[in-house]
Amino acid sequence: MIRLENVCKNFGDLQVLKNVNLEVKEGEKLVIIGPSGSGKSTTVRCMNFLEEPTSGHVYIDGQKLTHANKTKIIRESISMVFQQFNLYPHMTVLKNLTIAPMKLHHKSKKEAEDLAYHYLDVVGLRDKAHVYPTTLSGGQQQRIAIARALCAQTKIILFDEPTSALDPETIQEVLDVMIKLAKENITMVVVTHEMGFARQVADRVVFMADGQIIEEGTPDHFFENPSNERVKQFLGKIIR
Amino acid sequence: MSGIISARAWGKVWAYRSTFLLGLLNTVETAIFAILLALVLGVIFGLMATSGKKILQVISRVYVEIMQNTPILLQLCFFYYALAFSGHSIGILPTGIVALGVYTGAYMAEVVRAGIEAVPKGQFEAAMSQGFTYVERMYYIILPQSIKIILPPMVNQIVNLIKNTSCLYIIGGADLISLTYSFVTGENTGGAYAPAYLVSGLLFFIICYPLSKTASVWEIHLKKRDQRVLFQRTEGTVTDNE
Image (cartoon, rainbow over all chains, first blue to last red; front, side, top):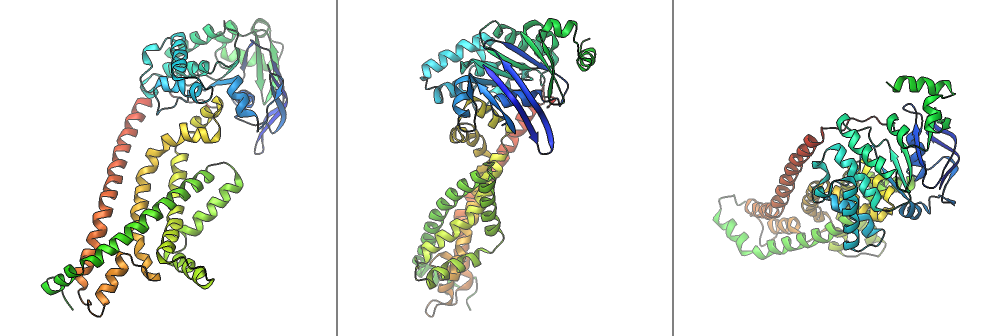
């Protein structure tokens, strides 16, 4: 579904990604963890070309992602949920959810709104359809952002630290929605520090450090007996 | 020399009121077309400045810097005489429209650029991640958010442009200032300096004041709204960016 081939990314002199090779299968739930600055976010951002790799290639459904075809491929296949939600503040929640389906996927207003209400039900926020995003709590905004991603009905959803900007008490409501999604046949790539979530939903966990994939495996292998010293260190610090 | 309280001088101004109205009409007409040109140039060069494409950014920068760092009078003369001596004179008013439009366009471009840059990066990314093209992104997502930031300073630039029509005097225009000058120095009409310039100034004021006032009220309203939003947002947005 998604394949990264020798992806390198430099920001000026800083080499953020060093030869990342990664394959995500259809319907797979992949969780990427690792210390700050390890290149996790950059890796998912390369998957929809928010960052274009300095070298290497990204394939979506077998098709090579290029500067020229990215808009079309993203539109059809990939959605994203951001750390800072990035809802459109000048639109109501309903408009946030319907703008892309109407303008990009050529749905009628009726179809788009039906779709929006359906996914608002999924995230449990149907009653917020007509308010503006800034009036909502962080957790609610993120659930709306997830509903917005779902409205595009893409096969892939990327999550870039979806709970890192949230109050501790609203983190769980967002995780609950994501756990619910994980039961569907959506390909999910999640960058997170939530180890409980990783354990519960991940088919596979990837550990990154210094711009490289250091270890990958099933959650059981990963959390029970990691082989890499760096991973052990990290888990020792993060799991209480 | 007729003073400000001379009934004769005021009578003269009144008798020649059509001259002032003609000047006003010419000034307004020049201003309107120049504003349209400035808006078009401002949007084009403002978008170029924020396009992320190096070459477009450089072109936009060069245009803005040249226009902002040379006097409008010089630009006007240069343009007028360059055209006249190459035999392509387009007339005084059109020259004024083009020169003022191109000059103010540079300021408009800066206003547009600042407005677009004020929209958080996340908005561009969200739009890109949904598959909006550049034009769609700007049209649906970015410009509706920047328009409120752009409008007040844009109105100020429009006011400046209207006042700058007075520069047409240097190339012999028929704008309000030029006609006022002709009036006070004319053989038959000369002398009524104070009343003539007061009337001329009043006419400018009547047009410009409502515009500036609108802009400043707008700006205050905007600041209040931003404070409200900021207050709402202080909860739950601690960042831990990678």
